Amino acid sequence: GTSQLSQFMEQNNPLSGLTHKRRLSAL
Image: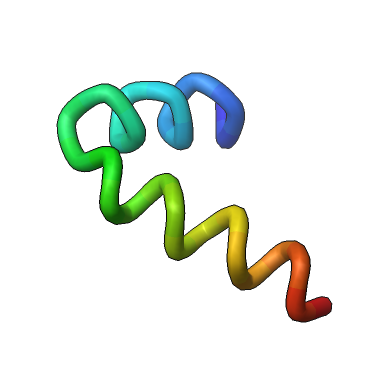
């Protein structure tokens, strides 16, 4: 479920996807 939401958000808002990736990298 989370994966689908992430993909949807990334498609709608690429910036959001970038932020999410950065967060994962930070962790």
